[in-house]
Length: 124
Ligand code: HEM
Image 1 (tube, rainbow, N blue to C red):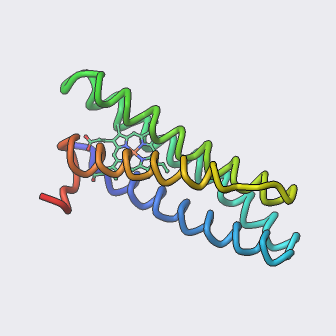
Image 2: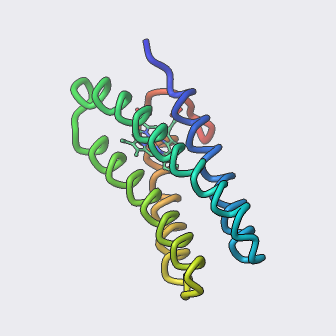
């Protein structure tokens, strides 16, 4: 039995690194932000690998529809983090991407914690 702990751990760390990288870019700390951004990109890969393992393990048992949406949603959350960081680095606006990030993030949390029934159910 494969648990979701590795996946949850990696995406929580990714979100924390994302917030730190954003704050560093914003404060003009180019060296620090570059390093944190690089580590974050490593965590994207870990999130995708751990999520991919869960996907192949459970979609065949419980059906690919919602799992496909979870996979796509997870990739979009990662995509929005990367868009926000590359745009803030170039001094471009990030408002729309923050909105999309929040929409995809909430959708993915809902799918992961409420709809898909493996792992943790903190909201019952
Ligand atoms: C930052 C991006 C992501 C976030 C915030 C996220 C969030 C979550 C959450 C909250 C859960 C439920 C954990 C649990 O029930 O214990 C979960 C499970 C899962 N995630 Fe992700 N995820 C992300 C990226 C991905 C990616 C990229 C994939 C696919 C490659 C993926 C595939 C899965 C699968 C298959 C599950 C198991 C669903 C279940 O049956 O509970 N996730 N994820």
